[in-house]
Amino acid sequence: MSDLILVLLIVVLLVCLLLTVGGFLLYSGLLSEVVIKTGPPPIRNVTIAYKFKEGSYKDCGAAYTETCSIGPKLSTISVFYDDPKQRPAEKCRYVVGSVLSEGEERPDEELQEMYQKFGFKVFSLPEVSHAVTTSFPCTTTLSNVLGPYRVYPRLSSYIEERKLSAFPTIEICSADVTNYMVPLARQTDFFVPEMKEEVKTDVKEEDSDEDRGTDITGADSHSDVSSVSGGVPWDSRETSLAASTAASLASSLPLRDVVDINEDIKFRDQSDRGSNESMGSGSSFEELDMDQEEQEVKEEKEEKEHKEEEVVAEEEKVPESEEGDGEEVELMAEKKEPLGDGEE
Image 1 (cartoon, one colour):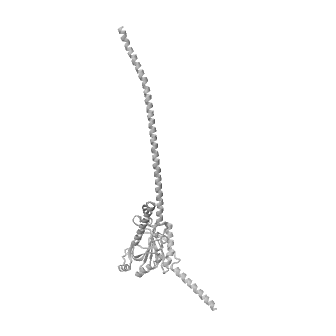
Image 2 (cartoon, rainbow, N blue to C red; image 1 turned 30 degrees about the vertical axis):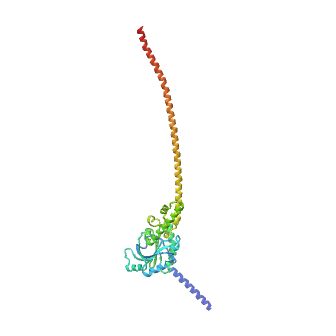
Image 3 (cartoon, rainbow, N blue to C red; image 1 turned 180 degrees about the vertical axis):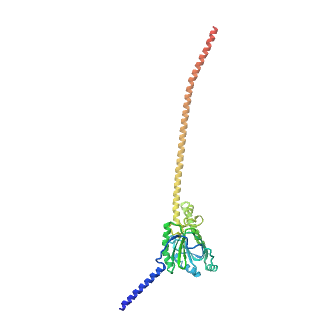
């Protein structure tokens, strides 16, 4: 009997444990509805204290701990620039920091100096009118783990289905909710100076790769890079960042593949143009020769007709001259006859 009671107690404890774990997961947002929409973002222009990091996004917890320890009452913010599916995880770039002020509010100088003392830098993010947004409850520490698994697949699908140019991905964590936003305008203004330098370096490397390709193939690749520069966000390439920065969450070919494709297209176009020009030049010479032959035949024909006309004209003149001579002889004879009668 005692054994049965013991088994029942164990079963009850297991059920209670499962209920507790299940309730905790539900409270943390396991089944919370994720609504993706496009509209005004949850924040305006903000001033942040940040640190630029490079590495796996899974290792950003230490940076969050550091920024929260300096300003525990401030909202934390993170900006993720790369898509781990398109860039190695150890080379992904992101920013973690705290929101010092929002809108027209000025940041607390003492707090700002405190962040700068620990190696943080200050940067202002712009205000945009439209962004892809959603939110997830932040009720427990587990919410920070469940949020990305629930939000990012839906966010990526939403952007890909509508073919939006949206990047980078921004998280703003407050006391009870985590807001996600992906700007649809002024995207490169969300790039901190370190990120801009990183991408400029990538651009130079791509250009050097293209130069080496030119030495081997003899193709002019510089113009291809400038026209393809899909993912390069500044200078003359500012409008095509989505191809190289994975923060757009849209699938695209790597820059090298795009450049190779464009080189093939360009080479084929040049070959087609060359063949067309050679065919055009050959046909133009043939037409010129035909025109010259036709002209010579025409001149010979006209000359022959002219000679025939001259011969006919000469033949017509001969009878007329003979008839004229006969008439003159008859007139002379008539004049001589009266003279003869007078003498007689």
